[in-house]
Structure formats: C-alpha cells, structure tokens
Amino acid sequence: MSVKTLEILEQLKSLTANETTQLVKQIEATFNVDSSTPKLVRIGKRDEDEIQPQIQTEFDVLLVSVPAEKKITLLKVIRTLTGMGLKEAKYFVDSLPQVVQSGLDQEAAETLKQQLEETGAVVSLK
Image 1 (cartoon, rainbow, N blue to C red):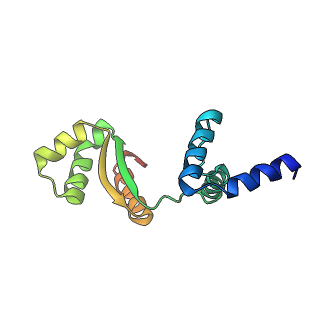
Image 2: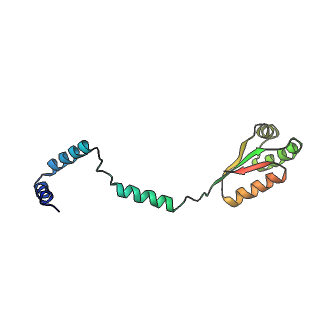
Image 3: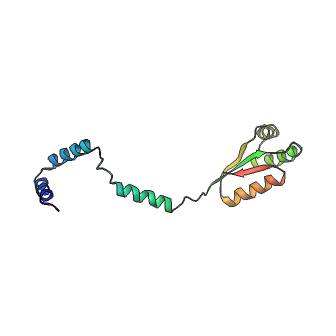
C-alpha cells in the first residue's frame, strides 16, 4: 500500500461508528455505488443458477386441436378424464386450446398425452 493509503486507513480507525456510517453514505452518494451488496456475491450466485439448470417437475397437458371427425371420441375421453358433463366437455373441446390437467409429474403427463393423441388430438406439454 502507498503511504497515502496507510494514512487514510489510520484516520478511518479513529472514527466513531456514527462517523463511519456517515462517511459510507457520503462515499456511496459521491461515487454512485452501493456498499450493501458486494458485486462478487451477486455474480457468484448468478453463476450457480446458470450452472444448475432448473429441471421441470410439473407439467400441464394442453389440448391444442382435434380433427372434426374425431370430436365425439375425444368428448368421451375428456369426460372420463375430467369428470365433466356432456355440455361442459363439448364447450371445452369447442374452445381449444385448453389445459386438460395441470401440475402433473412427467410420467402422468406423458400417459395423458398418449391417451389424447390416440383419439387423433394434437396435444402438447408445458
């Protein structure tokens, strides 16, 4: 360290807690910095998030479309899967795209997707 830096450091040691707080606030205002969160900590945290990608554990089964000739078959499947009445299931199928079920694990979502695709429907997982 330079002599000048050592002198400043010695002067800082003699400050009271109140004087130190005021000095920090003045330094932050003068140099437009924030001493409350060190940048190295934020960068390290961001790097950890990038290294460990988030694995999706819950899926929504989205019914995208159905051919007109397969609509009745799909209505039966939708009624079975959701417990809807005929009128509700018809409205559901007429107003696609719709989420059939949400918050499923991957295996259950894939099984449901396969059941719907067997009727000729176009299905996606989100």
